[in-house]
Length: 183
Image (cartoon, rainbow, N blue to C red):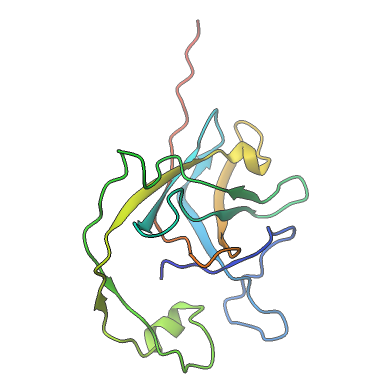
């Protein structure tokens, strides 16, 4: 479930996130991230996102959008265009091989909830033979419009669908605030 869905343009209003899909107001494709502890906006990157990137895909990583939750008029969606540690970086480590699970394409809709996943017919998994690396990017909450010292409890992630590849987030973590020292 690491391809969260996406859009070709950044969100300019709150994502729709109903517990049950409403055909009149469908949920916004993407992924909600809730932090166990709120993340404080400090100087520099506040969040690190690791992505699984197959080595035959875009060297700089797959672009994606980060939207503040809750959304407000003084905050904005930020587009991450490239990763700080990309496929060409010596720091990008090779990942272990993994099983790729596919689900029945004849289902009436995509998997959009835990209950859909629990009842979906899968293929049992195929061994993914192409190598992948872990890419990383630091996200500065100031880029979303948060003031220094403001706390963030969650974000909404979406792939930028302008290409054929999808973001595969495997770990997202808040960084602790910097310890400020006096000169």
